[in-house]
Image 1 (cartoon, helix red, strand yellow):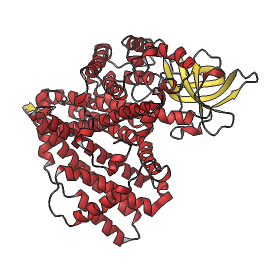
Image 2: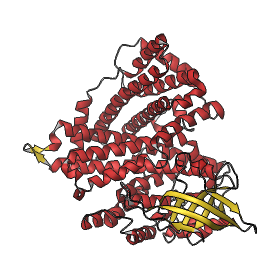
Image 3: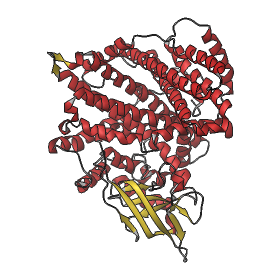
Length: 594
């Protein structure tokens, strides 16, 4: 997968993908140290006090916690060692974000500090700006925040009304406007602020210090979840910002925001996987010890279904996540070798995999939502009670589908970016796949047997390529107005990517004997369940797409449905029994087992 999206038209070998089992001992130690910090400094205090952190009540404690994280080096994971950071490679940073999910709402606080609050300076700052701000951010002594969203500019970020005008003496910019939903805003020392200079079409970015005159902070917002993270409005009333605090190029702020969001989407996806693993462990613990009808509820099929599904979704999406993270690292090193600076290479490498980042953002956040929802259901009434903490996880997880671009936006973005690269910039060519798709569909129409797993994975890719090609040619530019179709296409693309990633991971583990045979047998079943679910869903999404644009052409509808069914309805497994086996294996281990 040398290019983002290129996996659609290629047959990928298992040796070409990274799997989490290949993380080094040092990388695993970083993960374990973050989890240990979260348990000691966050989970245990919450359990002791009997309630979650609240930004409106415990702000000083949260600030102290962030500073302690800085002492451990956690605030500087993406900052170069020269400025006091750890300068982790991208995939290790993703692993860090997964572990950080065990910090509950503090994951949002630390995530802002290490990602959107500091990366604009890391990637776009000049030497003077980096020297002035990055050491303090890395140590935790300077708290960072990111001001993009406005009351009238959410998903349409570039429509923001905040303005910046150069003063008559040419030494400062005067910023006026309002920002909302600003994480860490209640205590931040440094704000990355986006505003339009004069009548510019696009945003510019500025580094604004809390002490600058004209900046004021609103009250802490009362939120559904992540209550332990600071969320405020920030107001700029003739706020004077030194001219040298313009970050990057004038008018380059919107592109900067998009690039930073690509990174944030990967980190958010990692948080979803980390949260899902945590939820699975809690669900297993409770199901094993809760006795009803004279036996543990873990013995019942309804509970096994839930536990099995959580394990399947988590493991498969984890496979896609770290596969992508490693490709970003490989691309970064290749670009550096070609002469790009480290900052340029990191920006461009993440941008290369913007399609996959969008897919992972919406899928992994939905895995997290599914996992905590089913965990609460397993707990029953106890899950609804504050004392178990499950209801907190339920509330906290909901934000994952909203920030870093809503899941609807990310679905549409993935397809828009794919189309742009194929039709506009010509960066990506799927033409070699066209004949392959035609030939494969013809074979499928006359095939009457059952599919094996490798064929099922390939069928998911072909189904997406077939429908996207037909829909694209038929609807052209009108497709942008058909968001329901676009979102169905995104879902089909996502399950194809995840299915391939999990299958390649399984085969690499098998070939290189990276896990024992018992685990390998269960992971084969994990792949089988995911494929069964994915093909069933793809058939439904594909049917909706076909029926939506062939309403006046029944012959075309019949022809397309025959082809779709030939690709999606011939994989036969007993998913019920497979889920039971996965659940029983998980319960025997006593926690998330992989």
